[in-house]
Image (cartoon, rainbow, N blue to C red; front, side, top):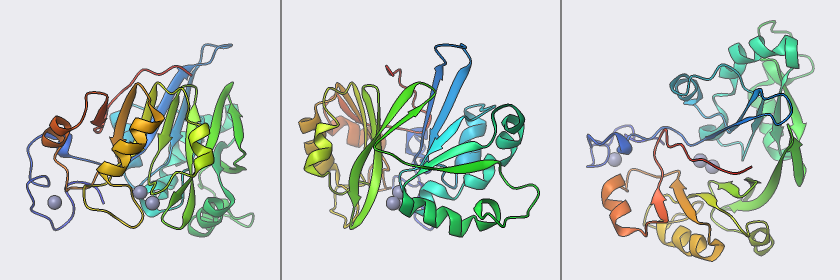
Length: 252
Ligand SMILES: [Zn+2]
Ligand SMILES: [Zn+2]
Ligand SMILES: [Zn+2]
C-alpha cells in the first residue's frame, strides 16, 4: 500500500525517519555489458511509483523488465516506460517485458491499448511481451525463474548470479530452495509480524532467510506495522529491513 498508508496516522506513517517512507517495491540492476562496456539496465516490476523511482535513480534507459506477478503494486507503472522506450526503440527495438503466461494475460488486458495486436494508439510504449522460461539469458546474464506461491497464486522470484529477489511470497516450494543455494544477497518480502494469508510475516521470513543462508538478507514489501529502526534493532545484522534507494553491490 506504500507508507505512509492512506488514511493512517500511526507512528510509522507519521514518522520523520526517511527510512519509514516506502514506495511500492521493485528492483533495478545495472551492470556494464562485458563486450561493449555499455551500461545495461534491468528493472524487476514497474509499480505505480515507477516514474518517481526512475527519476530518483536518474534512469536514462531501460533494457528489459522482468515481472514477478500482475498485482497493481507491481505492474501499474508500465505505461511510464513510454518515454524511455521512445529513446531506445530505434537503436534496440522494443523493450522486452518478461512475464509468465498468467502475468502476461493481465498485462495484455490492462494495457490492451499498448499490447494488443490491434493497438493503434500511435504513442504507445515500444514494449514487447516475452515468454518467461525457467532460465532466461538477457545481455549475457542468466535470470533464473524461482517458482513461489503468493497465497494460492503462483508467482515468480528471480535469481541472477548469487543474488535472488523474492517478493510477495507466502510459501516457497521445496524445489525452489534448491535454486537458492549459495547466495550472497537475498531480497525477501516480510510484511509485518501479524500473519497474513498471502504474505510472509517477519518470523516466517527470518526462518527462510536462516535456511537459505545468504550472507545478507534484505526484507522488502514492508507494511506500516514495522518501524525501520525499532524493527532492525530486533533483527540479526545479516537480516535487515531494506529501504527506498538502498543500493547493494552484487556479483552477476
Ligand atoms: Zn500507518
Ligand atoms: Zn502481490
Ligand atoms: Zn505486492
